[in-house]
Amino acid sequence: MRIFRELDDIPTEARGASAAIGNFDGVHLGHQYVLDHARRDGAPLAVVTFAPHPREVFAPDAPPFRLMSREARASRLQKLGVELLFELPFARIAPLTADAFAEDVLARALGLSHVVTGADFRFGKGRAGDVETLRNAGRRMGFEVTTVPLLGGDPPVSSTAIRQALSEGRPRDAAAMLGHWHRIEGPVIHGEKRGRTLGYPTANMSMDGLHLPRLGVYAVLVDIAEGPHRGTHRGVASLGVRPMFGENAPNLETFLFDFSGDLYSTTLSVALVEFLRPEMRFDGLEPLIAQMDADSARARAILADG
Image (cartoon, rainbow, N blue to C red; front, side):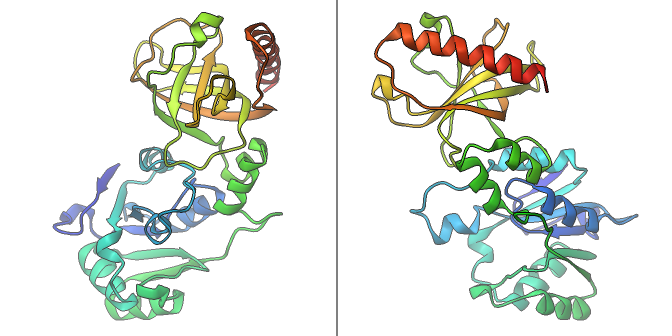
């Protein structure tokens, strides 16, 4: 997949694409439904999205809400067959009127042949443009427009509903809307190395900028894409602030079953499979270790059953 982050000088071979437009946070079943309508024989499959997410610009002090990083989003889109990813700089796009966005960006800069959006798509300065605005621009500029109805369900599939499920510790419900496990992806960073002294060495990952699922302990599946430990591993992970040790920044600490090796700087993809229990404070190391043993045994059983 080729990624373009500037509007200038889009190469000839990247023009004429059939593109789905949206934020694609989570790349859930609704997003996949839109993508399916963008597939056209003879035209590259593309996604037009924005960076940073508009909500990060208009509500910079709001709690982190993104379900995935830009890198994780790109990886998921590539797995779905997307050939071209246009990550448009939102600061440059935000001042444009709806007509200017449709004509100057979609038609002239990107040279799209077909545009697919959800039925609730709004665009342009002040969100003044809607799907009818886009259709009118397409007629003038020569690109086709397809509008896809919102995907139903109870609740309807949306990034908001997925965040709610994760906040309530319901990762299987989130996965049902995503069409895949919710994954936390990123490099392994150095922590306090406390786990190895307890018999549970963990791979630590930052949660900066990401929506926080319910804090607690999860059964997890861990994918390592490269290196000597490449493959899928089972494990148990603690997502939280480690109240027993007086630390506050949330992170994810994952213990891989039956594993030995150095994972520092390795990129992990940790899938939350089942919530086991909330984060707890213990009176000492012995009860902590006993609970970790119980958590591991339960996670093994869950993951063995699929």
